[in-house]
Image (cartoon, rainbow over the protein chains, first blue to last red):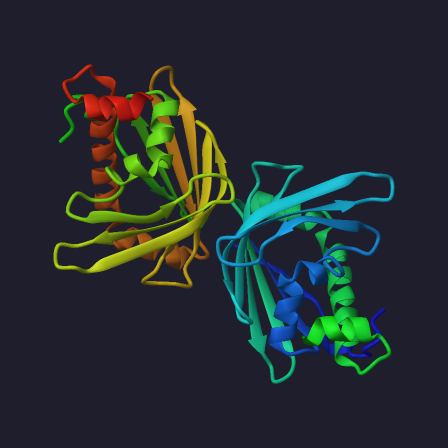
Length: 179
Length: 179
């Protein structure tokens, strides 16, 4: 999938704690924290990787700063739409994002998502913890098929980061990722 | 404490689930949901009841609408300050408030707080669920002495609601609560 050839050590680990209503997702990326963080917070970049390839993403707002809010829609080819929204509790540059998350198909469901960016020396480990209201809600999330979309999204992010890093002909991408 | 004489059925119940990192607090009030909800969302009212009596509350911002944020400080007589902040994920009038909550003495700690307002026919039951990242964090919160401040705050809210309901000489309070 990715052109980086480094998928072997960039595996996505998804752990559902038996005793806590959490999902902990760990993934490494071949780019330093500031570039990965930017891909998580700049809506012009987020729109290029978040979610599975088959869906078109439309961002209504993505104000990734402490106290900001976001809403986006993933759209199937047949027009079916999935809306998501939440607020950013904390956005600590290159280190940490804490946000709430609601899938609008289940409007009373809310999870608290914490992403921590660790510097591995030019590479980055992102650990994302989703905290839900019950073990049942967590298990329903796991069963919803989130895993495929998540892995595919991370592969798209690999490609975006790779395009930005390499001194390729894609000057547009290069500029976006390094400015 | 309260002048309402109804404390016997307005008990504060605090339940720590052994299996989930939550605290569930249940309290009834002698006022309809719209008045209790207003006391939770109008900063001019919040400042009059939230927290124990000995502390002075100062509100920096309290923008209680979906996507809004808040910050306030509780101050001891000796000048010691305790800051708190978060964002409002959802504010659904007279029904539901979902917000994040951080005590700034422990800046990486975040809880997700959901308050649900139930109409008991002129009275209101408020059920507040605090969801934390671990059982240990939850137990630390319980051990912190939150309970005393919580009960005292609710008693102050009883008094505020009672002042607003009764056709008392306190016209100022009456106006604030019914407009």
